[in-house]
Image 1: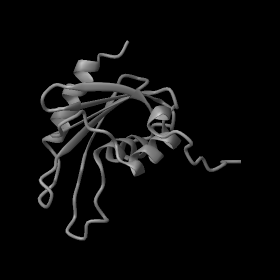
Image 2: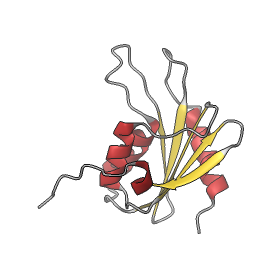
Image 3: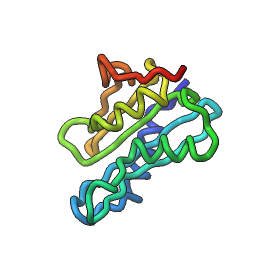
Length: 133
């Protein structure tokens, strides 16, 4: 069973590590793998803008770099300072479609404690999937 509150707490903690000197918009994520390990991610900005990376992709890419296989993740939490629970951007949604199971839960939160639960597939209906044959 997933401890949603703990996973969101870890996402909020990861948010504090964000490097966001330009936008001052810090986002954190916590990715839970099937062996119980939490992979942290935060957004990292760059003065050239496009080289920056979102928190969700940072956590996913870190997990893959650490040897975890795609689809070995059981949940992702993301937290940011937004009015409504923060939602992953389109690029993160596309990465999630490829690296996570379609029914994997995604927990979105804000600093006020509002949360929303969805799935990877619900975040990106009609997703582009490149054949890996």
